[in-house]
Length: 149
Image: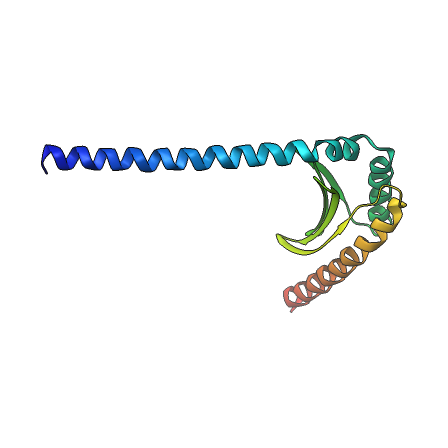
């Protein structure tokens, strides 16, 4: 390979790297503006008494069903998880959205109303937990029967 071919290849590599850098800067700016727009909702989600009530009611509802509901903050997102079912409260520019997930599969989304009783959100999510518990118990009984044979 000649010196000129090598030089040309190096210039092409530098140009493509510069183009990627510009795209990265644009996506970083976009992400920053999204986070800035969601900041008031994230702050409200973290500090509103509604959130505290929701976490207490989720824990109580799980206890009544003999199921541990794990509560965790992931950045500005509040995730509640039980038996592979997840409910995430995600702040965005337009408010907080409740996202229902099974594993990584998104089932549905709905806006969160801080004026509504948090028990209503609990009541909408618990049937999924109960259904999964029933499936888990049936599977455990099937495996136990196979082992007993």
